[in-house]
Image (tube, rainbow, N blue to C red; front, side, top):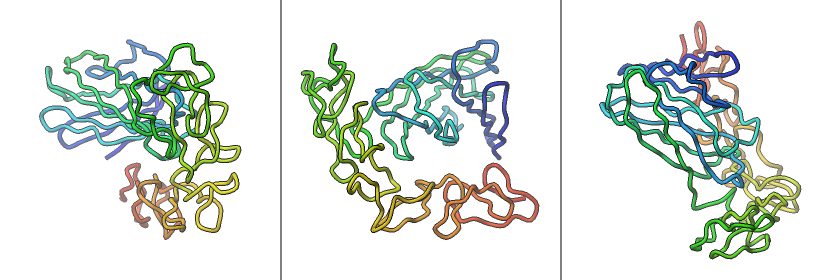
Length: 283
């Protein structure tokens, strides 16, 4: 059962498992020791700003068979995340001295761009700090890393790093601020933006909701890009678990919190007798 609630100025998701109680607290602007609820991990994420991540998918395990089910934070991609974002994983029933591992995936437009994990030893009643560094062999929406030995160049404000050399930003060497250059995908992008990211027309590079970038527009088949929660598959917009956080009604992705259209993570919508729970199950 998943129970969604809130504390002043901070949303959280509490995950109640048969093997114990684990909780994931959403992005926190800063650390507040007084707010730490007992045994927990205080996680700091680090990643290249040029990735323009909008969400983090967090999961984990604790030695002894306890799991932290995957959760998306924030639930809605409403801003660009900054390297240094933090959140808490509450481990209420974890054994003292157990090894806990937290895994983080960084996403933009529903596409995973970077991943990382880190482990720490649980201290009963204490909050343990851990840093997860997200790394990626690919850059936003199909741009691939140059693979050179230099992944960051100093004094390279307007360019990117290729083989340890500061290089001017182009479609084939896209980047800014000295990060590793990426080769923009000709399928999903047609330009390197002033921010050093691959783009399509005046917007970001196309994501899973489009098959290609054509004449400065993301398209799927012969039409425009698919709507929210839909994936472009073989030129057709389809509701898919990889893109729909709610439930699928045919090829429509619905919110999934209505008792008449209940579901989560791209499952088929179902009608509930009494109510729709936050985890997509019915009562």
